[in-house]
Image (cartoon, rainbow, N blue to C red):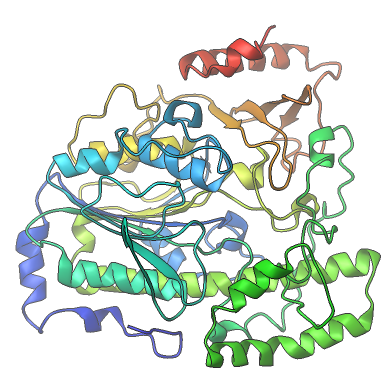
Length: 527
């Protein structure tokens, strides 16, 4: 099915003959205590670009439907802000050091280890995943799977269907992943059994290639520049030494990231960009070139430098990212419409989240990786099946290691003792358990690597954050998130912080013992 945003087929059109589907689904899907699970995850979607969290930039009506009809987690975080490691945490319910996938650069996911889809399979669930996997192995624990190689391509992407079976599908990737997910829901699954469907999008990963029908969006919009866009990183050496700056043409490439391809212009990622747009067919490429040609001509003729160049780059980045969100939001709407029209919502948990947050110019950055708020936070909204009474905002801190135990408890499956996450089911029931953990542990392992973010670990409480950068550096940072929510002022070592520092170091040491992180042996945290 070749779907674009001018000819999207309504989800209702995928239903069976009138009068057959609703009654069948009512009988077959509403098995008490065994709700279906639809888990939609995007890549690098940040809460700042989702209007149920932040109304400054764009409108995401379909994503907002999930929050308005269900719950919105206001303190949702990841354990390692990086694509593959985050996915491994989600699947296993364990921190990166425990599941073995610490880094995209050096690790391969051990696909023989237990994951929540495997436990659900054993409990009688049908499991399927379509889209991005990014764990350097083939999926296990799924009855049906179709994944993109590595990061995948936005246009006319390849899909791996089996160990030795790869095909190319025509169209835009976000549409295609949704098409296959709806096709499986409608025609391929056994409607006598509960299901768990993972819809994993490449969007909104760098380099933000919008669908051709969305290219004109946001071109009349000037986005407000963050007030710390020109951060000078005083007192924060690791922040100063990163390579993810919008200001730098080495970090944010004018051709690869901003599409300013022109004859004779070179960049370190030129061939990568040419390869990506080279996947387009003639009509797609013609539309692409028609849109970008005048922007390219104007850019090179203007000769921008300094702050003017940085701010121009920021506006192009924001527009491209926002356009890619538009397609994602539209396709989430298709999934919600299908579930509604097929009488599935009453017995289905619908989850929308991302593998981590992202910087939209804060600190002058794009990308993620740091334990700072924009990166460690991730959006999380859910529509709940009947019997779960929570509504509106849930403020307790949750983390992506919590998804696996949540899905298992929801399905009536015993949560394995070695899972390090904590089930969110009590929160979904409207309870506020006093015993829920008072802190989150974070550990980023991938250095040296793309963007050169230093290795670091730390703890976050409801008010404070303590970070230790280690390996080729030995720097501590402490933030009071109440007084300094943008994390501009490292107060570690300042007079008056002695007691809170002592408490947080003890908490960090306890966290590393609790989660059995071997880093504690190499870099012991002392009082």
